[in-house]
Length: 490
Image (tube, rainbow, N blue to C red; front, side, top):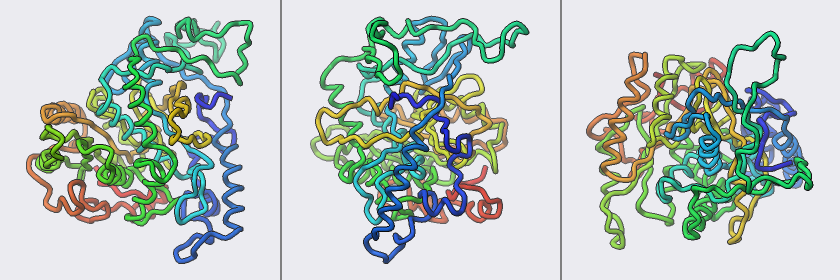
């Protein structure tokens, strides 16, 4: 099976939108709830029973998140598709190829197995509990690509798309059997370089030869930088944005390895991870308070003195806005607003998903969201080796889901490189927010500073501070919602 093409990511075991909603019993074993028995506070090193449990769950997750069923994602030729602020209309093979290059160049981070044991637990995989961390990693990775790479950068070895169909969607004709597609683009558009010799066979077990992106940059420096960005998300303790580091930062908010992480908590973990790293000093992360972006706080954060080696007086900024777009389900009135946000080039994606099933949203077509799915278990890659393979960090199988299935809890990400970019971002996002039919916008930009801001250094305040977050935990428990995150209800 091609490890880079998780077809439909619909699992044989369990499957469906509620895949990650564990029962009370399963929560004790698969990592969604508390850590495995024997790993509670004060218990010291895990005993042999815990190690056997971890090995058993690792084998189970390999099956649960590694086996897939065949299914195709259909794209409409007549409707524009939005991907990270760019529009694509699939009316020609060149346009489809342009989309392929952009989609496959996105960094894809999924469940991994057999990585070094997480401190304080016997876990060597994040299968079943780390999907929100992976979605957060993907959002941060997209922000770093925008921060470090040229705007038109594309991965030179981007693969052909798989399990997709491009067709003109029309009402089914009585003479057209159900499930039969209208004529669509064949694989010939993927570029002659990527086509296999028919005599060599087309078994799915063989990897397809990467299609060199015609518009991609072949500069060795850029590819080295691309590899370095990916290595920062490696699954080992020294990676600044890896699972080990994020789990360690999560302990400050009472989270442990194996716990469920919500999108707002992950936003603060990403902020702390960027502030902690020594990889660069010209980037900051700001997390909005109470669905409000305080311009004064962003300005103070970005105008902070930098090292003497840097001549720039402004730090680039990633702005993360945790919101809740409804009660138990998505409020349809906000769909148009979410679409308008995803159309902006300053938007770097949305950490969201279905209930207890996190996804990273990067675009939409018609009434369906385009996403990258972390629910695919792959072997760990040793990113400390200079020539490690990048193939499993890029997905060539785009997936879509209806807006109506979107969980209302999410975190929206933006990136501004310069002060002028930030001012343009404020105007563009405010205009997009005004499209909502609701009385209250999803979030707002205001002048000045937050009253209780700056309690934890330069950005964000305390993630558990009641001044910053209105708790929904009581409501969640009463209504038996799966989420344990905290949000402001709109």
